[in-house]
Image 1 (cartoon, rainbow, N blue to C red):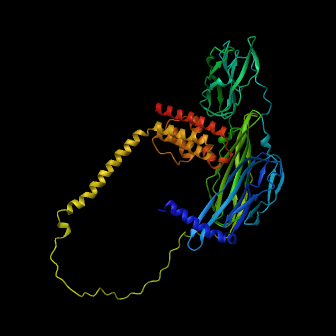
Image 2 (cartoon, helix red, strand yellow):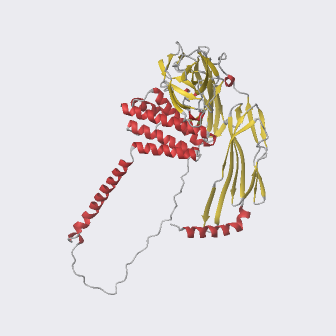
Image 3 (cartoon, rainbow, N blue to C red):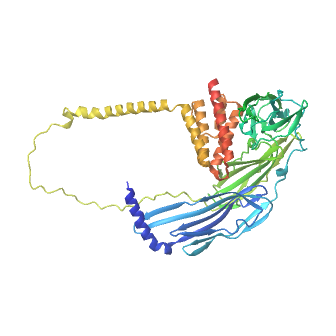
Length: 599
């Protein structure tokens, strides 16, 4: 082990040796890249400006065209400065460093956008990247899809359905559609009607239970509401919750009663505010099955599908990326696309990304799949067309969206993988006569007792197993003691605390690691069997067999998918989304524990 002082001396010596030759050996590479280079209006892409320097010092890295095109909006920016130091005998210290700027950009309008090269200065020399061109195509028709007819604003006046009237204050749950198809969006809003003054910061609502629904909540940032007339009295109707709920099973589903606590303010400095609690009423939604006849695998909504390959030809054994985008109105997290086998091509598991947004009151967005295709044989390879069946609840008709078949070619023979370390060939040695040492003297030796017959030999044989048994028992007792202290509840609380700390530190990657660990620990505790590393297809039947309802299973899988994606796209995650994710996770863990209590 190298002591700190010794390490500092080695670094200093290496730095002196490196300084004399840095200027002569300096090398640099400037890269300007975008993924993907062809997108549509409203979509995002990643732009990277990177300088890799070997044996020198980076003085400056500039990209003058970053804000040249106002049609490309900068969504986020992240900087990385990795450095690697290595030592070699006779060559001194070698330093390899990089400076990388990564931007997430959104296309606001169609067109062709050209960027001039990025410029880096290293040891007085100038290095340039290649220029870059971004092509933005017009938006898909589905991107402008909205409700067939505009939905009129909610009437919050005399109608008091979904409420229990109270002259001072009461809660009301408004459901716009009380009869829908399975998978169709249900708009749910919770209002607080008050005839008295409310201290805004004291309002603490509790969301109603919505078992059987997949729910997307709109963020409420301020306490606002219009003045309405109820029984001839003016009330202010504050919006506490707005949700897009998608029923996951047929029959009558109940939206539970909401709750809220708040303080009623007074005009006196000497009177304490009055704490008030109100409970609403449950509301029932009738969910119908999809009409027949129709495709059995149809998704609810209205979608368009687009597919593209990142290149048309590769060397055999190299990778081609296939991207499929499904855009439209509906619960995009319900969408599933399976890529059929392709002869002579190895297909890796896809990376799935979701971008949800509202078109008016209708929730929709884009779900993207990216498959890595690796041709194992030369020749033409065809990706078959992909078809997506859907049921549009607005027109109450089935439809279909599909892509054209795509082809790419592979040339050459796949290069076999080379071993990392080649065996060294050693020439055989010639046999030679070997003579023992020449004895100058000889002596007579007395007869000795063999070791196996000595009295202490038995103890020598028995002692190691005894020591091993004692150590094993001691370790077992220590582990049992630690296990008693680390109960399932303590571990669960520790994981939540670590996620909260990562949220305070604004570390999305560590935060979503803890979110995945929290959910996985709760599932392992519930199912009493390992679930880590299972795919979604393997995890779903195990959760169902353990007594989880369909809604909870879908929530668990959606949260795990979202957390896995966020860990690899941490630069696009904001603090508010992390807070909502933490709240969803705590609620989900409580539901998992309740299922365990019933089992």
